[in-house]
Image (tube, rainbow, N blue to C red):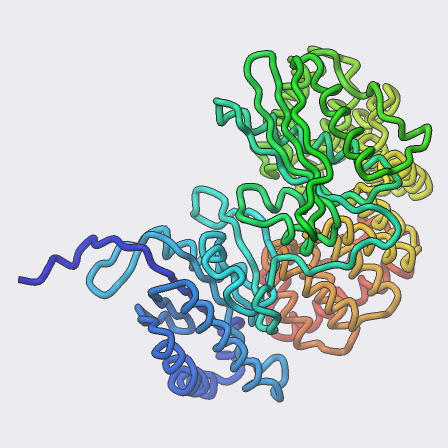
Length: 596
């Protein structure tokens, strides 16, 4: 007697695919669209599934759900289909091309009769929704199975909050352009020619309590910050260093991917009031250990322990320090162990980037200030939290929120010591208040305090761009991206804006599309891509980009640009004219802005 097919569970690679703009295609030519989709199924998709042992579970009009025995098979199939589709439609107008979005996940599924269910399926479907048109989006579990085995370009999208999925999902965007089989999430940059280059990897938490992870991360971040203040070094940003947290890698691989000669790695053990740091400095290309040490001390001496690591790294690399850079007591720190512990917990929540974690971070930082009202860094990071609250439209009273960010940053600057953090926030706040010259002065001060801070360089680039100094903005953002090879989509938005303002529309399109490959949900990238395409005279593509912006459509009204801090009216008008033009095209299609 056959086994009951109900509720059978198994691990499987699940592929979900959907045609981009299917409703639009059907509206243009219903019969022709159906015929073309059927032809693609018969001559391309079904043979590819058979070749790679994919089982077609079901179709949903323009969508497919497929189960594969392995992720490698699923990705090979998806790459083959996407490449073939691009070649087939290369001669057609952009508005008539068939493009698939594909999501792939490795997860537990429930098999019932011939159908499949469960989170393993749901995650694949949601990843499909954030995939780039013509691209493929993998979950982190799926990506681990194919890394280094197949040829593709890939970008780490970070933890994504997917609709109706409880926990954030690590996601990777892969494109169809072939690269070497050793393709990695980060393009291999050249080594800086004029100074020692280093990446500090997240220190392992060896404490008995796994909840102490925040403490190990905090120690790592503080060491990165202290090294970043030294102009004679080239230090990779926290964002790219933390890409390797809890991942399998070799030091040689890290050196190649981040474009650095040296790697610092280690561990932290906290037991009661005692702290032990084990650290080693390695030459990435040879695996040669330049320095290694075990440093023990009291929790009350935590900053002295960090400084000892920093000074020994600097000594091993034979870097000459200026008088300003001399390593010693830090005015921005606190003498209170309780305040520092609360600060590390708050900073961990800040980096989670959700409304709930932002609220928790602010709550903890208020507690820090209650313990030590002179702790400059606490005020600076609290200002960052309010700026994040403002940037993400998580607050109702936006003017008050931005004002609070400014007041906290000014307090941090007045206390002294937290110059990098405080002046970077002030620059970001002041430019949105249309105080361009003051914003640029604070941006410059933040970089003098911490020359290797990629985010501060990016803020300076934004201020330069909104000030109309676009060539300088592009140079600054390129420098920021070199320090942070795993840079976020916002940096490419900043560069794309300046390219548009310079009239370099083709470069802007390429830049903004690269940004969307990293951060599909960042709506300004969609809107600026729409503008660049329209200014190139590619109206159909501009309309498609506007529709892809989805919920950002209300921000397309040209009047909304009055709140964007362009110093040069011509820059604002260039983008506003593109917005007006795309709106007119949308209305001609019977699609008011609010329904996009």
